[in-house]
Length: 301
Image 1 (tube, rainbow, N blue to C red):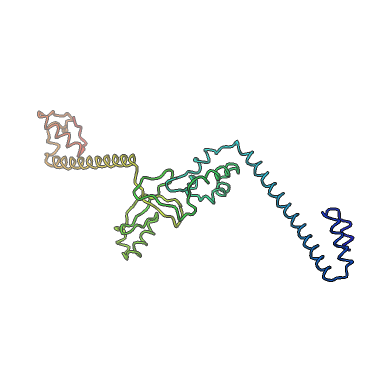
Image 2 (cartoon, rainbow, N blue to C red; image 1 turned 60 degrees about the horizontal axis):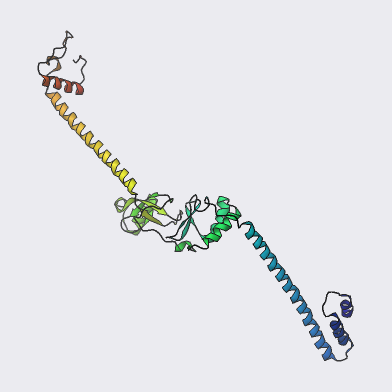
């Protein structure tokens, strides 16, 4: 049967030698010789299978290389879109992070292609170009390696500035007032009535806007500080003017109470309706001030 299969097969190399081996193995009376020839034949078949597997691997590698070369040739004329980088993704070399502006969060290099596809619908060509470009950058592999800027530094753009609270006894920062009061109560053993004096309002920024976010304190830019100072100066000036007006009101009230009855003040109309002009200008000023504080039904000239 084996002899018939070899005679009908046209693809096996060294066919005459195999036929001779099989013929000797079937005609020989020595059991040991037949066993050895069978082993040689089995090894040869295994060798043929190995050659076929090797040819398949070579074909697969060549096909993959051709596909990669074709894709590289199709994207060789493309350039990285500025709307994607740095319009969408911004690089901070000092902190070795990639920041997504619409999402307000840091994107790790391993999650960048999936993030661009899932949340921003960026084409595969632009994703590959950005991924290839990011390979030349020094970036943090994990979020734990991300460094925080120093406190009281200028805010980073375009990171949003969040109003928050800072503990006066330790460096605990949060954007929730209830969490801050709970921290002061539990960590520093202070009552809720005394919690207000142990934290202050600050401005915060973070790389990862989540419940476990790590914040740092930022200070206002010089322009905002100048605007705030100008606003405070105007507000103080307004308060001073209000105090002056209140003082004048008190003075006018005291002077008005010191004046005699309006019916006997010269210059005011009596029952006849004709005003009498006072002889002294100071008296006219007193009448005008008095009329501003206590309006009369009578006609003032």
